[in-house]
Image (cartoon, rainbow, N blue to C red; front, side):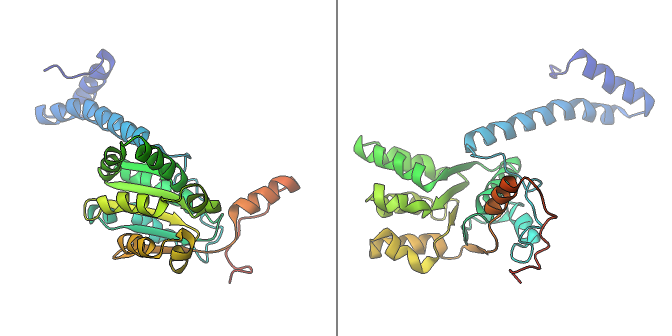
Length: 254
C-alpha cells in the first residue's frame, strides 16, 4: 500500500487493533489517519512560514484580563474561525498603540493558516518599501499580483510613526494598487492607530485616500480597540521589578 509509516507506528496500530478488536475498516482508517495527520501538520507549518508572522503571537498567550472592559474575547475568537475570510470580507483594527492590535491580528492569522487559508503578514512600511523598489525596477505588476493571491493579507502598523507619508510619497497609489487587486478576491486586514477620518490628512492625497478608504472599509468588519497600553504596563513592571495582579478592567477605563 506504500503507506508512509515507520515499523514502530505500524506495530502500535496493529497492537491497538488486537486490543480493541477493531474491524478491518477501522484498522485501515487508523493506518491512513497517521500519515494524513502528518501531511496536514506539514501543510500548516508551510503556510505559517509563508505568512512571515513577526511574532509568535497566539490567542493563548494574550492577556484577556487586561483591558477586559474594552476588548471582547468572544469577538476575536469568532474572527479566529476564519469565516470572514471565507466570505472575503475585509477587517480593520483601529485603536491606540499598545493595546494588543498586532498580537491579536497575528493570532487570527495563525488560526486561519491552521484552517487551510493562505495568509501573508507585513507591516505597512515594509510593504511600501518593497513596492517602491519594485516600481523603480519595473517589477511592480508582479509584486501586486503576488500580494493579490493570498486568502488573507494583513497590513499592520498603518500610520506608525508617519513612515508612509515621510519616506514613501507614492504610498497612497501603491497601497491602492495592492488593495484594489484583492477586491472581491480575498480578505485584507488593516491595523492602524489612525481613525478613518484622519486618513485623508495623513496620506496627503485626498482623492486617492478616499478611494483607498472605500476599498478597505466598505463592508468590512471593524474592531475599535481602546484601553490602557499593555506594552507600557509591562515596561513599567519590568522597571519596577515587581508584578501586580491582572487588571480586571474596572479601573480608570470604566
